[in-house]
Length: 468
Image 1 (cartoon, one colour):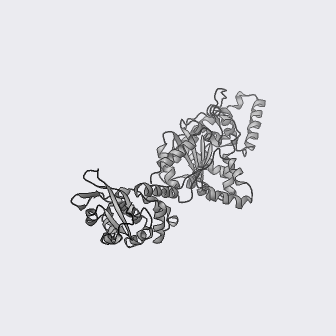
Image 2 (cartoon, rainbow, N blue to C red; image 1 turned 45 degrees about the vertical axis):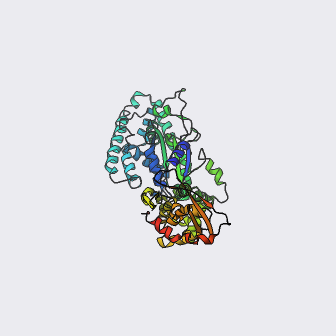
Image 3 (spheres, rainbow, N blue to C red; image 1 turned 60 degrees about the horizontal axis):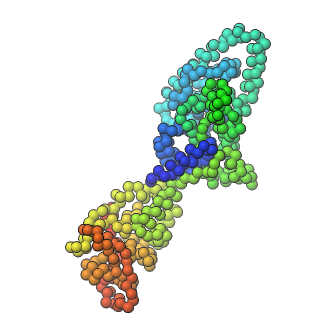
């Protein structure tokens, strides 16, 4: 299934300047993984993607979601090389780390979360090596502070210590730059690409954690941090870039089923205003994607353009053989048009020595489509019987309804007591092509042409010869 247009539409949605946080709404099993994989592949030169899958976090009542989030992001930053072991930690952050943290514990913390954050087993060695290098780099910088007190008057050092202690005590304020927050934000901010954080399966998380994550990633909505603030820890009045997202991500995408999410919200909060709540977290309307709906739209367009019939007529015929498209598995519907040119044969069909046409007619394409939708050969007659009262039915049969006898009588055929003339295009060189059906006035006796009655079963049989 070609979703290129949908990918482009989402790119334009995400790339708008005012979009900092948005929702990609996809139902479970409705093409989320394929959409994200293709989007990442298509726009990997412009965006740097990071993913959180909180449903995999092994949360307990005593652990904070934010700790999982930070270690998950740290692991990804280590693996993609964004965390440089020789990173220059500014004095205010380094002092806080020196007084309140043990840098080598970063290794232990990251590895403790390994089962939840690793995408595959091959990443384990690279993650451990990167975490060790990073922690050792910070440790070496902390060693520079061993003689810090000797170079400061006691009062000043005590003042600095109290300041950092107070700062650490307020670490639950998610907008503050504690050492790990700074380390992540600094690495994200240093990326030359537009950074995008994907938070997946959002609607499948326990409501308590779900709304907690929403709060975490909306915490910077009022914070005015420039990229230079984080990267160099200096304020540059000429630098207008501001971080409106947690950890300095340029874009955050919450991936969920919006309908399921609204149900979770109302079950949790009662009659509270869900739409108003969501607007606090996203900067533009929700972007919807459904591979099954996209597939059905593509089917409708194909039937109209290539089979030359309205989709409602096809739906009517499918109902007659017990097939309901809305009940079909989305994955099966998606596959219907994949490599569809291989579903039928295009070759010459000869009716007489001077009447030839190509087999890839609307009728053959429709039968090939029906077969992929699960219609059996012995059900085809029931399908066409159900739709034969439609005005477009004779046009659908086209050249396959033409016989030697009808050619000798200028294309006349008879069906259900009505006389028709099948008009073909004579300007196609070797091959004829069907043009239109003309209804012959009732003043002409139909009884004289009963021998030209169309045998629908035979027409289907001839067309089936060109369906793989």
